Image 1 (tube, rainbow, N blue to C red):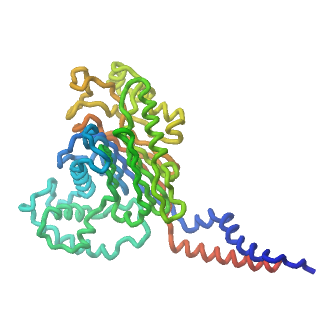
Image 2: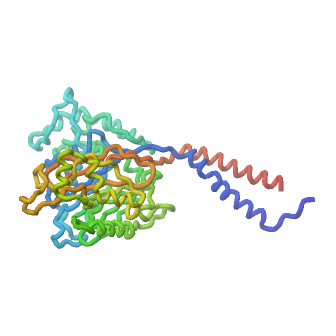
Image 3: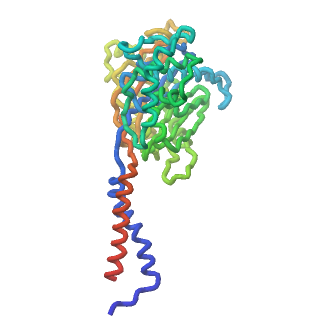
Length: 442
């Protein structure tokens, strides 16, 4: 004779069943409805030395547009003078508008097929540009594509197959009298600005492929001021993966012990950066809680070498010996301030300090006095699932720094609804079987 069932035992057993199954099977179930894709992320940092750029500045090399990315994360330092007495929220925003225009035009500029259109290497004035030459050739194509836009599943690393259309429609921006459907106007831009934020001399701008934008959620910004420098951090969820991008400017100085101030700055940024909570469970609020993190900026770390020895090694392009004396490399090796962070091998000349509009480092003859060259401008990554493809500098001379670019491939988890429905059916069947056999054999 079976022992009598205790009151409430069956209810507690029933309630525990789904929890046990989730705990025991969660990873197996997750694998059934999550696909892993890849994103190409181009990150760049540039201290522009308070110089407002010419509107025709060519930044194609810096943005590495020969290999288009899915996301561009561009951080600037000193877009305005740090001694101008600005407070957060009262900054001069005029340089930001210029930089955004340059970025927009660079990312969305494509040269048309010469067999179909005249190549517009320079943007014509509205008076000289006749949009009818190209509108008819591309309007039908774009309208037909519009109704067949992404169906909710991201096609990662998917670049446009018709550069002609994007380049030609770029020129339409200059023609105020063009009567073209709004749907075409939206379609012509391959990249859109996701977010831009300025904090005194710091500026961070994030651009994404238009088809990716709708898969980005939980977009938040956290700003940390450290004296007249600090950081701007952006948090976002791309599909099911949490990303964080940090743009910073740390304390300057090449005296012994100045690197400790930079360490302290970085620790303050890590400690003080807090993103606002969201309605979703599990959305990170701290930098290191994210699955993929990229930190870029003028970190200002110097070389523990004399001026003369540094120039001697630069003349020999002996980057390995030079890099051995790099302060940030040593900090990464210690595993203290930047414990767990990774940087690629440096195979380029120090990025600071140059004479403006020159290929020469500052010397004793310079007005500002000599500086020992250093790799002040750096890009680091944190977390698994991110691989560095390239790490290099660009030869733009309008600042006393050279811009730096790091391109990454990053894994991203993609929720697949139809797979989830199938997994859910199996899960429900498993729970029902658990309940059935539990009652049968009690």
